[in-house]
Length: 83
Image 1 (cartoon, rainbow, N blue to C red):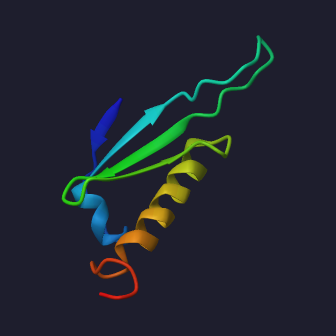
Image 2 (cartoon, helix red, strand yellow):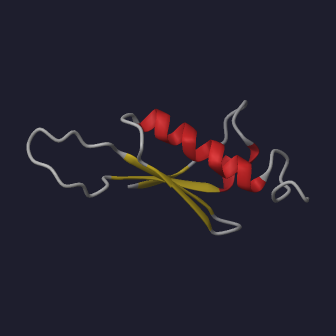
């Protein structure tokens, strides 16, 4: 499942150019295994994919994806620290 994100006030600048999707990572386990829902964010202009599935909640994984993408793209639109 993927959605295009509608930019909201207070959100990072780059989310308006992103597609956010969810997935279920494949894990070994049986009936007692709890699934962690993974989040994938794709920044369309650069083609950068960021995935996280380490936390149990989608909200926490989404926050980690946004944080990782912001570290890569930079706070104001430059790439990394050199821009």
